Length: 178
Image (cartoon, rainbow, N blue to C red; front, side, top):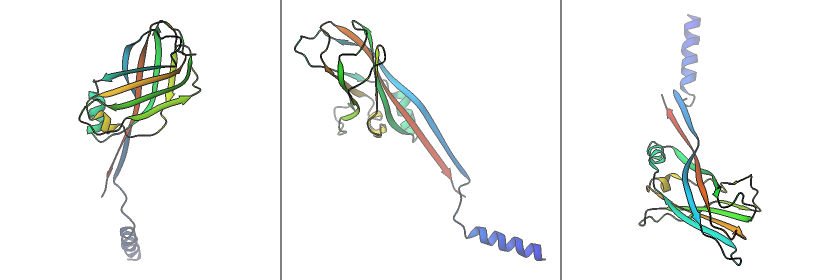
């Protein structure tokens, strides 16, 4: 009888504790990139002090699916890689990569999500880490992104091309209560 009473008291005590979830799951999306190859940069005059190139990326279906499923998406990094005409980015003193919605009716602001001052390069690539953890999902949900790359410094006097990657990460969590 004593053990039955102890059991009832124990169960009653547990009922006064805050509810614990029966299931607590989370999923991470490792860094995934949107690539835009072959961005053409014309030869610049000797007086030029920056390269400013913009383009629209429209194939966001896989990211849109993640956003629709409740994933929180964040911009992680941007990478520009020289593919012809130049071999490195030693001329770059600062870089900025901004993202805007490609939907002309969107009211989302342009985000300066990647920037560096005194950038360091590795061979033919320049990688810029995200400067803030801005929610990328509203931008992805518009169906396209306008990406602008601004490279300050004294650009080469030859035409060249680059590939641009905008990378994101994602996370979703789900909790099932009792």
